[in-house]
Amino acid sequence: VKSGSKNDFLIFNKTIENQSIERRLLESAMRTAIKENQFYLEYQPKVNLQTNKIIGMEALVRWHHPDLGTISPGKFIPLAEETGLIVPLGEWILKESCKQTKKWHDIGYTDITVSVNVSVRQLEDPLFIDKVKNVLMETKLNPEWLEIEVTESILADVENIVKILREIRQLGIQISLDDFGTGYSSLSYIKNLPIDILKIDQSFVKDIHQNEESSAIVQAILKIADSIGLQVIAEGIELQDHVLKLSKDGCRFGQGYFFSRPLKVDAFEQFMDRLLVT
Ligand code: C2E
Ligand code: CA
Ligand code: CA
Image 1 (cartoon, rainbow, N blue to C red):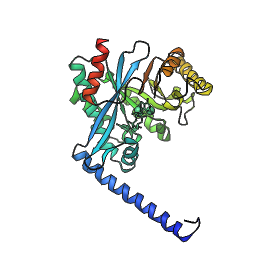
Image 2: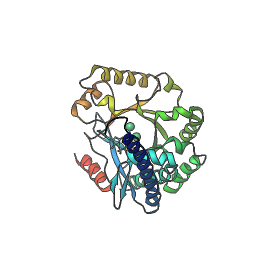
Image 3: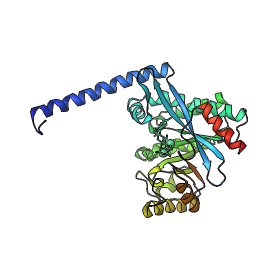
Image 4: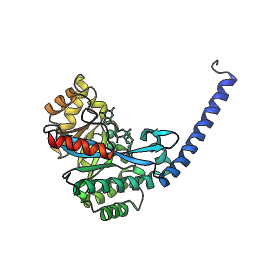
């Protein structure tokens, strides 16, 4: 099609129309999915880079649609956020991951923390704190084993969100700042946020072993985090070289395909069993 032709316009219109139809279909499919239990969680191990011991896991939501197959969170989470469906979905995710973690503690997999991704939209829900308290009460998980991951998108509504994060922390829950370094927060800004952990974004880890700039950025993050008393975890570790470089720079914790992909419950237990015997 020649650029600027009449057809271009038609194609353009059609694409927009298709997109909004696709979105509406996806939205209604998501409502059904919540009711019909098509969502499930996978858990990705977080490890101590020195000892190789597992310190916890990140819960990651998955959607298995009966006809469409598995739909990635990268596709449906943004839509769930726009439509507000993330609120009921997020509540289910929080409850399910706390329930599973308590179960693991009870059957002998002790000392593991669960990290749950929480969207700004959920934090803005006036009932959020009550929902968290309820989940803790119902599942009997000790809040010190729960961690909430938020992104720098909280900065868009920072005053409001900081209040909520403080309340969450008062319950004994830890807060980590996900995808750190990709957003707009300057290093000096983070000292004013009620957070416990910085999660170094995968984009810096990817080439840390061969790129001076990434390496320098990671070193700066580690240094400042240390001086203001924040813990650091690196994500997206795929290579032994990543582990070596990060350890050398003083990063103690990590997560990534090098250790394990996100796993379903059974496979996660097998992963923990393998670590116990070695
Ligand atoms: P995220 O929170 O940054 O999660 C990390 C993503 O990186 C996950 O993708 C994980 O599978 C992937 N990953 C882990 N290790 C590696 C690695 O070594 N290399 C590479 N290339 N990738 C790795 P996933 O599960 O597709 O999730 C994508 C995003 O969707 C998440 O990014 C998060 O923003 C969102 N998400 C996932 N689950 C939830 C959830 O339960 N609630 C909310 N609100 N958002 C979620
Ligand atoms: Ca995360
Ligand atoms: Ca991340």
